[in-house]
Image 1 (tube, rainbow, N blue to C red):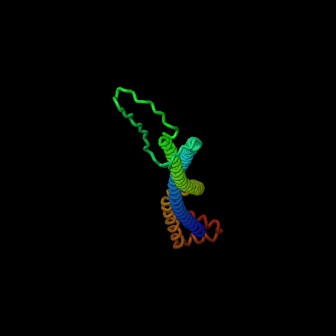
Image 2 (cartoon, rainbow, N blue to C red; image 1 turned 45 degrees about the horizontal axis):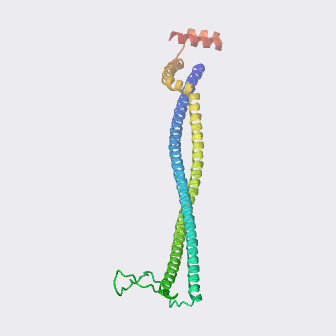
Image 3 (cartoon, one colour; image 1 turned 180 degrees about the vertical axis):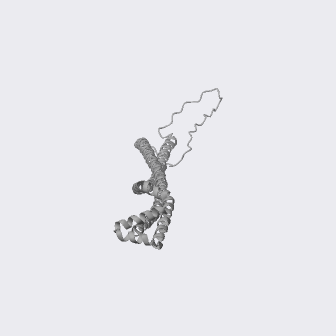
Length: 317
């Protein structure tokens, strides 16, 4: 009976061990599936974020390239403005110098003419400055007898044409004033052009500074996104490592766990049948009453022989 009890205990222990092994494998498979699912989801998020960061960095770099082109365009515009202003200024200075030379020549000529008449005591009378329409009129000769008869030649004195000289001096004065006005107007136009140039340059410089600031900000954003990209790649690599660890662990327990999960029911049924047989045998032995002859025979045998009788009894069953 003790041997049967030991066998029953062994079977029950095996049953408990199989249950524990089965439950452990189910739990492990469940945990592994959960971890793999979560890590796979994290990796998918890593991939999506990496793609987004790559696109963002590409867009930022394109915007930076465009900004650089705009800066270069502004620089070229300022260069052209400066070149044009310099050319205009050179033209103005040359024209001013030429006009000043004209004024100087006219003044010298007027001075010479004025001195000539003063030297020969020819009265000029008041010079009309600013007279622009001066014409020289020549009186036609009067004929006393006939138009076909030549007039007598009469020579005038040196002061006869003082009015014509007066007109020439007035014209010179007028020309001097006109040229002076041209210089004055040119200087005003030059001043206005310089102010317009400075205003355009100020606007261009302000725009350039704005573009430079934009370029610097883009570079900062690109660097920041680059750092985020590297961090995301590192996180993805870690998650991929975790996924591999789980897959490797699953592979390490797969053989044993798959075997116990597949064989569990069959093993349990076989143990149940064996336990039923052992329990029946035990119940038979516990309730068995030997005859007088068997009792006498029993007294002649030791415990080992008694155990043999039990075995024969079991065989008879």
